[in-house]
Image (cartoon, rainbow, N blue to C red; front, top):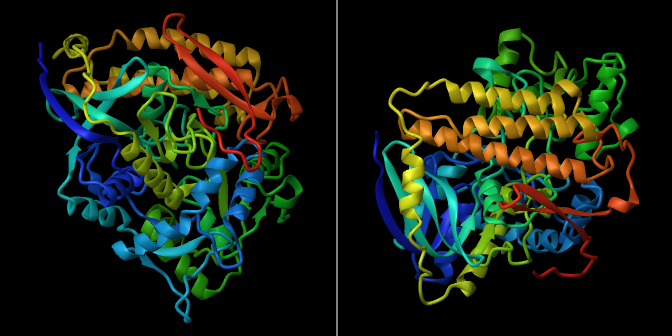
Length: 559
């Protein structure tokens, strides 16, 4: 049997995930302290996280004539009131500051002839962002007090009396169990993809909107540790270019492309223009026989043609290749659109950890930022930077003089992991079990095939089947540590599936048309103008639902 080597590390500030929020948090921490920082990254920090392949716009910026409060109002309206205004405001107030810092680090932000930033719409800036992640990684590498641990998968917090004191991680490529002690921890490990059957199953199942390597570890670790979670039922479903799953925002905002049905009718105003309503209208138009649906690009200028094809080469080259292969640029053919499978991502919705204004979770010393932090939707890239900045400054204030003893649990964790290693294991079993999970969620918990609709009965069936599948996954074995990581990732997805189902059951209304259609409660209810939170009880193996009143305008929530 393969044995794991135990490696013990200690740091002042542990950052789990070296993506958008994590890298920026590390840089912020170093600006204000000479204490040690350790970034634990599952991939390699140079090309990891949601920005791994780059991005062509900064979607959160306060343009001239607008205020941070305007951004708060926009996000609140888009989320149909289920937001934390205090979190949104503190995030919005930092958007322009971190944007200027990014430019100083080397990011190319496109300019107007007068030297001002080139805006795209009311809140966006055009950038050349294909190297945004290497720029961040380069800045991190210049800080001597930051250590980066690449190719390790953090899978469990070490918590003593509701206080964080470190985490366990396993090597992706080598048989090592890391026991990391820390005075404070920031979770910036991203949201969750792969819970549901995707648009392109089988060999192409990882061609999706959200990074497939984001498996929900951030939330899953918090759930198992007893942290309070919020608004997981606000799923995110992206409206994308059909088959390529390329972004549509560049078309809608870059050239003003309208959503039209097969009859050429503009339908977006008919259903509303919030993010979820744009998806809902597309689903209904298809169901009622007026599909397929498109973004109307036919007739745009030659210059717009070239600009679009260049933009997509930077972020979704498959779309540009499709235009080339079909022999027709976007000016000659409209772009067909479709919805993706549901995701859990706090960068677009309000789902994630329940945090206070400092982004501290209900576990003392554990902070969350970016896609892991709930209550603050529409944060995108720059908002994740701001949350990383806020969390880093708060963590520095929290730090004590001494490390909390992580205890002697490493031996039992090591034994449990080693029991999962078997050289004769079936290496394809995890893939089959993952596909089974995705089929369950798709059919019974409101996936693509069910037009994002579900009922109480279907959700209860999903819960029953996911529980049974979890029991089977708990018996699987892996040939090596990479296979062990895959088992841990599937376990993370499964506990998050259960949490999501509990939240969907608890919100007895349909608040976000398109994102979540509750057929038993098809209307919005004032009774649910509140946060649906949860806490997992390991003794009962159940999720305890907590209903919290909305934080009023101008108020700041503290635990």
